[in-house]
Image (cartoon, rainbow, N blue to C red; front, top):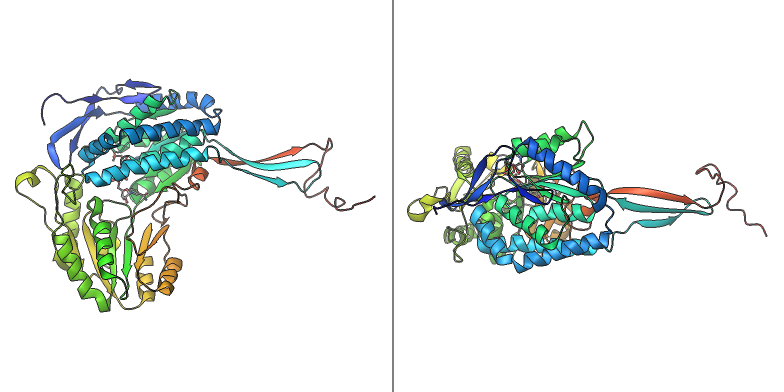
Length: 505
Ligand code: NAP
Ligand code: MG
């Protein structure tokens, strides 16, 4: 698409403003690089400073707005998103590439999060509890933290920003969000929603630009109290260290190498459906993607041939075409990485049973398309079984016993999601108990999280926090224990407690 490219601005203190650099960057459709979505601000530290200052100023008042009222504004925003769901999904597919059914799901996840979190505003519960001393009252309450820096990836361009922004706001914080360079349009759209429903100026600010010029200054800013990041483990590790010297609160959601276990009593058609959706949905570019499939030896060949023939017929193309089942890689570098892993798998001695090539010819030449790819006879020690590829490349691994399968799954440096297919309740519960991940599914693939349950992972996937669920409130608020002594005298805890139990008439 040629013609005049639309210019999108930063959103700071309730105004759409140009970056201090005066420069912009292009956002193009990965399914058709001739489709220019727009030009976005190439911001730097000066823009971050302005956004943080606005957020700091707005924080003074926003923290005092009653939580139920903050929740109502978020609900309005969720309803605004519902009204605009189709256009939001289309723009997300255009800038990110995944198929429309999936971007509709991505937007719906944001809507669900808004509806769920808005209710938390009326359930912002603490505890009341008896004091150990007479005429004294004790309780715990949540307090807001301050300015939150939100750094988001491109693979869920709407859901992940809402997973961070909505609970941050509900808890009384203000935010500065940096969208991924590949997907700023979707966050611009979310900000338009904030504006439409009347979120006060300065409460939400957005600065576009890359990781080093915008992400770093957010992370290092002394007036940012919390950094919430979703992305790769490498960048997460760096952010974690950068936040450590000032004890800045930091919440990290990172990579995965998720495994599905298929037992020999499983309903094989169901398991094949699950593996297809888990491995090739979002072109494998999900943190929860099924990238390892462990199959019990008795059904190994049958499962593999059925999976390969189904995967072979997946229609790959531009996600805006409703008949397409798998979109492109996000960009040329990711495609190159995917193809490199195909080479690595071959060198390691895995058996390539499907795909492995870039798709070319016709419209394929306009974007970054690749065949759904399956390796069989993969050994758990191979790099393709251990490293996150983030592409449509599935490693199938044979095993004999459940114990062996659980060991293989747990060998991963990551711990986001796992799943088991079986008809045996004993096997299901054993696997559920023994697999060390933050998410686990029985008779479903490794993807499919719902907003009212906690989301996150163990080991190199996360640093102990959870997004979504009511647990996400713990990330964006601090607990305060409050004691109210109405005895009129000094009562010393743990000391003046000896005679209290005497009851004299
Ligand atoms: P990424 O390269 O780590 O980038 C994530 C975000 O961090 C982007 O906004 C990026 O900006 C920014 N960033 C890059 N370098 C930075 C720095 N030095 N300081 C501060 N910010 C910086 O990850 P991605 O490629 O966008 O996403 C894919 C990864 O995310 C995968 O590993 C996937 O597993 C993970 N992920 C995890 C979850 C989860 O919930 N566990 C969910 C989705 C994705 P630019 O866009 O400008 O590079
Ligand atoms: Mg793009």
